[in-house]
Length: 196
Image (cartoon, rainbow, N blue to C red; front, side, top):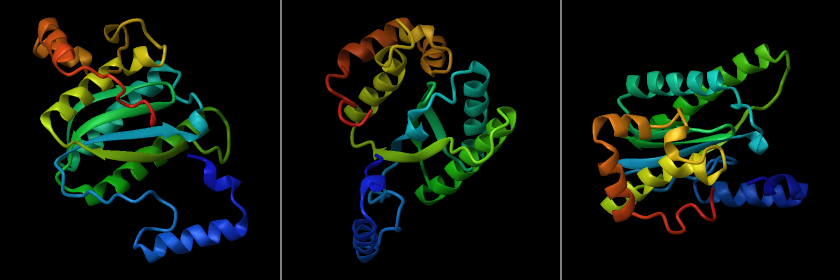
């Protein structure tokens, strides 16, 4: 994630030239799959700092995400906001708007939190990544992954113990048995092992 900073000036210039030659932007990650309907979207705080350790900030971020995404016609199917990153499972009808949405959300929260903490120029967010959902199995495994994420990272003993998660919406809308059946039918195995 932070390998770019370790490169020499010549290596950086060569890497940027290669990206431009392939039609990618100079520094942001390429997003080659743009025709899928559902995506797992992930954003992390810069250097995985815990800027979201306050519950009020996690809720503020979640509210802003819903406000901006719904305005753009994106449907959030699952979410979890942790202390240093978040995951969303989203129906994305217009992929080209994602970068602008994340820029608005991350810019707004960065400015506000830096003012609250009386810090100037602190970088809060790193970037976002996307993974196209390829099948029904991938969709429901992603759903389980999102709900289990607070447990995976040691923030909670049970998915039900973490409040900034869609697991509570699924519990109220479907029920605990539906969640259990989904968990059994679509197990995580090594999902997210090398990238989260």
